[in-house]
Amino acid sequence: MNKTLSLIALVLATAATSFAGQAVSSKKVVAPADDCRFRANEWQVDVAAEGAGGNYNGKSGGGIGGDLGINYFFTQYIGVGIDDAVGGFWPSSGAGAVGVDCLQADLLLRYPICAWNLAPYVMVGGGATWGPVSQGDGNVGGGVEWRFARNVGLFAECRWLYGTGAANGNLSMALPRAGLRFNF
Image (cartoon, rainbow, N blue to C red; front, side):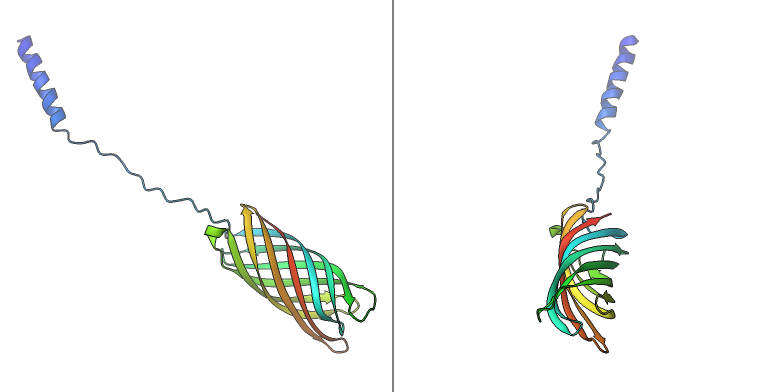
């Protein structure tokens, strides 16, 4: 009897494994991580050197200075920014340098190219310029940012300031700037 029960148990065990089928492996679909360095809800701090060339206070000339700015991007593509440049302006007429402060606020539209960590952008806005004379202005421009690290990048841009002053002549000046951009 023991032999019969052992034989039946062996046959059932062999039969059970032969009808079990193949093991099914579970495959999980894993989405690739978003490695784009340009994000929505992003704060930026700019530290830059700035130049100037054109007409200010009825005189043509050039200038150089430093710039600090802060930007916020609501989406990956749309943001706002404000920056303040302080420097000197040297009229080409040979007169001495004058101190100038230029505060600008802009709407920023960028197009990130994530594979290259690069984002060209355009800007439009306005502000004011203070120095020997003070006047409001408008500006348009564009630039490009390259992120060599997740939270740090280099940028270069140029904007054109324009405005009219009743007794002071027209403001018509290019303001290029280049520097570091820290992202949070």
